[in-house]
Image (cartoon, rainbow over all chains, first blue to last red; front, side, top):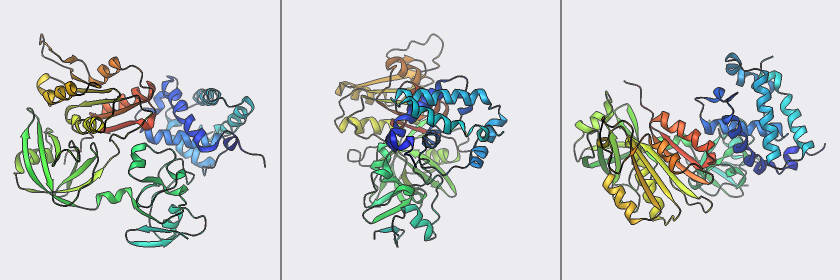
Length: 122
Length: 327
């Protein structure tokens, strides 16, 4: 089995560097930041980290069902493909900013993309 | 094999077993979720022994100082004695009321003496019990400098405990207290370029301790304190803070008033909310440390603003004063 993007970019320390950058982009984006209103920022950042870890192929224990359950209340509030696309955009931009190679960004994007239907409750 | 000690019971850790798994296997109901070191749900505290570096990787410096670690990814080389975060609530201290002074028309300074050792950091908080009612109050005193524990009690309209502390409790009375709790305190960090402290009302209490903690520890980079109230007479410790400002070149103090009477002249006071004044004085917070205390809405907005202004999330310490629901 080939090494995951997670391991190749340096594991947890690299993800830690990415979390604030990524979360700041998400919070500054008026297309999606209303979904984060009223949430505890520290807890939210931990969730962003779990998401990034998963997208990079790192260790995680989340299933499609968890994704579905965890986002159901947001789907009720109108979460749709355009919002998912915005998050994908920020994921790519964050990794680019950290100097991650394009092919690795592509791999991460593919993993994140594979959660789309569960996240959006389709 | 190393051991995990919890509440006097000692558990052998199996090969490659995490501290979390070891406790769960022995019937200790420790909280957890992701089991991959990301979600921090299993965070607990080491009171003896050193947690592994990996298990403290992304925690706040203040949490590391307190011995916090993520139990799901901790496989220590040595024995570790741990407590769950909820356990801090369990030991009850008896403290004696030794001073009651009004600081302004609505805030009372309460000083307490404790006859057993009470270790805390300036800015942490405690719980005070009135029968079954529990209220949290931030500690305003500085260990090593102030002999007594100091609290600033604001009379909350309809607040059973704040009225009882203001009117019912007498000098010499005993109070039941648990704690200390919280991660809102100063920690030394070479890489931090400045400290921004923003508070409203009695949210000055923890900041009064935190700012003096940083200054007496010899912190030399800028420290900005913005304290807000609606009217000038709702501010307090103005003279004390100006004195501190005169003594320390790197410390700036901005008392802020958001709703002065019409035509009122604000000599030496800033007009506006303290968070707005703070961002005017210091628009970029990259590499800054923030301490935000008081009104929950102000605290949460400012936390978000500070993060967007470049502060790392783990360098923003927020202590929203959430009101108890009326009982």
